[in-house]
Image (cartoon, rainbow, N blue to C red; front, side, top):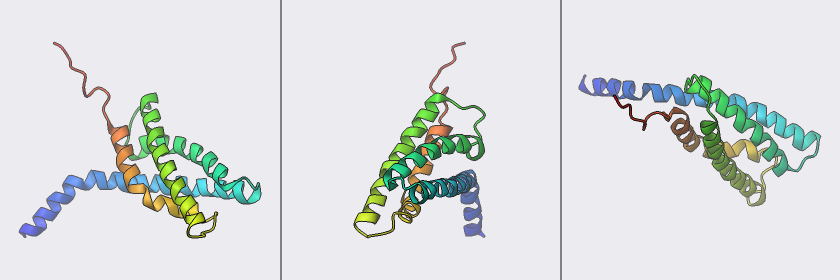
Length: 148
């Protein structure tokens, strides 16, 4: 019983974070599917260079991610330009990481330019979740003192 109780207690401590991570992945998956459809349309139908198409769809995806994760995943009541900007920096990190992975997959491993952007986010999801959680959940008033 002691081990079971410890496991239940540990789960309860991390339950909210686990639920947030699941929601983050649901938002990310839906956003990813829509982004990939748009990317493939730009790349395959309109013959836009794969890196340009990836950049265009990333900009749209970054904005959508901030708003949906703020509202749905982390349940923020208000949006702030500061948090949006910091989110943009987090996703800029993800963009650069994924872009490097995509270039490597295409140029080193000869993977299809249509498939490489689908694989790249596998490597960036976990660090981006923690960075986004830090940005969105950060309390701007935390360091302000109330003088009575």
